[in-house]
Length: 296
Image 1 (tube, rainbow, N blue to C red):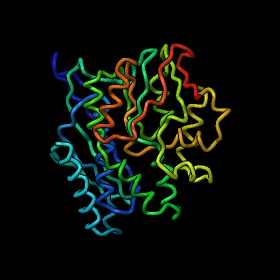
Image 2 (cartoon, helix red, strand yellow):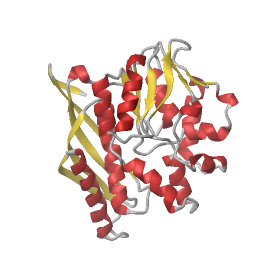
Image 3 (cartoon, rainbow, N blue to C red):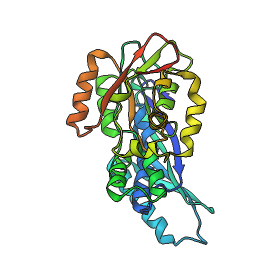
Image 4 (cartoon, helix red, strand yellow):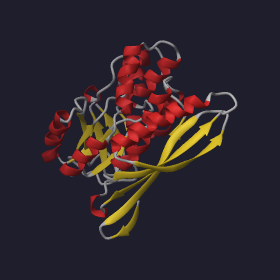
């Protein structure tokens, strides 16, 4: 975030990755929704974007790229974002995403820090996209399961962000590659607060738990668990597959917000009324233990 004046700041972010679904058009939509999420998580409004493309022109038909860009452009139009250009390079592996510029009032900026003891934790999308994408690559996930995951991945976090701003969240992050617990750890690391998360309250896409039970999890799950193991308490009582779900790397995941207890139920109701029916209160911010996540 860069402050331009007392009442205006810009947010700049970039994100791009390899395809996670077979449909190029849908991949473009997911990549754009994912790239815009960092702006939404900070309470900002994305305004302009630049395409970032790596494409194997010698081995893949250019029509694939056209479909990806068309899907991305459709999602940008939905978000009210103007595509102002981009850059492409030849690469052996296809990649697509955006560099995004947004704006926010400096006093309305929401960061990962700032959560206070007693705040409730609200997650706006269910977990499991990484696991289901892994099952898709293994030829196990059927079209219904993949369709549910895609519906969440292409959904913008715009409405959740706007309602969070109206309510007044104290802290927020989007849940992506580090998984729910990895991003929750970012919110409390080096701070004087911790979190208690009720595992049974965490929304999960149907079948993701079943796939996790048979070991269909992304490689990033294990790296996430190892990196944050020292900040997690209560995990010994959990089966390993549930830890995998909680650390599952998400693509275009939901927002994890800390909201005062007086406002949390109101925000949850507004989210449900806006169609975000999977949103749930999954825990709370606590004073002790500091810089730890306690699973219950």
